[in-house]
Length: 155
Image 1 (cartoon, rainbow, N blue to C red):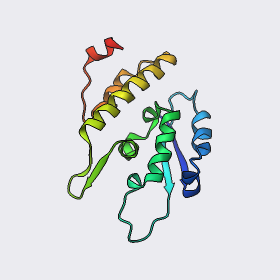
Image 2: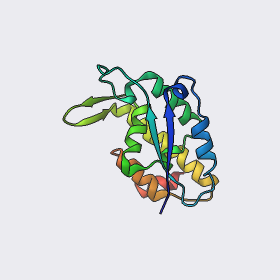
Image 3: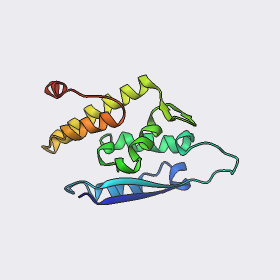
């Protein structure tokens, strides 16, 4: 069973685009088998009248864009069961919130995101001499896409 790893993130780190807490946590676990299930504990003050979700705040999104540029394979480590994959995806993919249906991603942007991540994660796993095909299929499925086994022969 994977251990859980929480990365605390505050407004100061976000405003300075400071990845040091995330970098230290991630780098310390690079050789862990299995890798940890990563979560983010984000503390970002907002006015009581501010209805935005964290993924709708440009500064927070920019921090996650920077993190994703450094670790494009990071979705592989996220704690999917606690909703971290959906939240991470919302940080990077344009979306809207619907009160009855929840988050609704821009379909074209989501498709590009999913395929970009599949390619990045597959390449990263290859450098580690790991397959991860089942987890990649699970990743795509959690975001509404099916990957055929034949697709992986192209990689």
